[in-house]
Picture 1 (cartoon, rainbow, N blue to C red):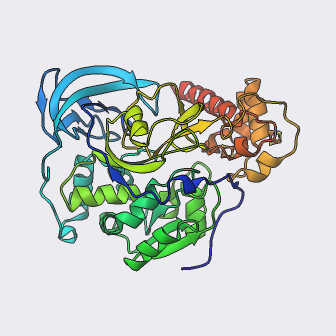
Picture 2 (picture 1 turned 30 degrees about the vertical axis):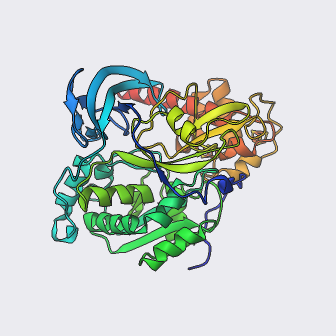
Picture 3 (picture 1 turned 60 degrees about the horizontal axis):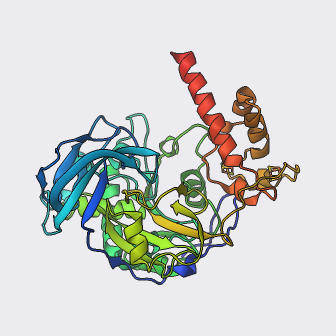
Length: 437
Ligand code: SF4
Ligand code: SF4
């Protein structure tokens, strides 16, 4: 293992990984009723292919891809369609869903398995990954086939497997690397084959020695990363692993790199090697408000409430329920929302763990400036945004903010910095769109 690499800026939130990091993944049977979202990925929702009363089989395509940046959706169970309706979702206020009554979880490969994937062309592999509905499993949910298809003028020479998992509480990627090492490694090789690159690294934070050793033992070149938030953000990971800096407003492919989460690699292996669509994922259920935190292999469409029950139920007074970790996770107003392909964790926080909901004035301490991994001045951007000074916020670099939450975390006045900056981003983008129109 090499020396611990990192990026400048960042913060050190309490990790709280100990709650679930040693809990082996438990496979949950599908609940009696599941709710499958048609917009689990970034981009256009898929178009429903079934109607109320239809019988579906496990792995059947129930939503058709709707444009290049979109994906097909598959049923993780066999059963009967009870309804097509809009419902609350963990990553957005609401969206179209298909409600299915489960009758069976039986079924084999949906596509022809390709154990000898290297005899397939990169285009065939990318097409299979698309058909299987694979998207980024680290939370962003960007369709993977799009990331694997850079424009001709972008020369990609490096693949980085993202095993940083820098969000506090979350341990699903760590368990995946330890328990399903072969899937991650096969997926890594499949993704490298699809991109046609020979330079491949796996970036793992130093607090996961078991995971790093497992990947290294299976042949991956592991780069050990310093434990620091947001080490798993793409630009920070690329800087730490390759020393390359993604330009402001640019993409990883601008510096010849594609980053894929370890969960995405495992899903790619299942799609290409085993012929299975992306229908399940590992979810960490943790936080002081959970009786028995753990990691669960659940089918998409399982409700948060079902997963919390599998983890022993709530404990004490839960003041915040999050989809994802406490730094970038999204607060939920109900646990009746379904797991999607991007649901890495469900975190229930008690008042001792959750941040204060009342903010004070900025005391000009500069801590947010020192911590911002993008080199921004969050206090100035948010101040401009509070007074609708969109032009000033734009000039201060609001659009470079990746909403990592580091500034909010370090602020002694509990300022809602990310909230203001996101508002500025929306206003700036809307004004640019209207100018272009
Ligand atoms: S300004 Fe944006 S990128 Fe910088 S720390 Fe805050 S949320 Fe992260
Ligand atoms: S950390 Fe908070 S109080 Fe300090 S300068 Fe930034 S916004 Fe102001």
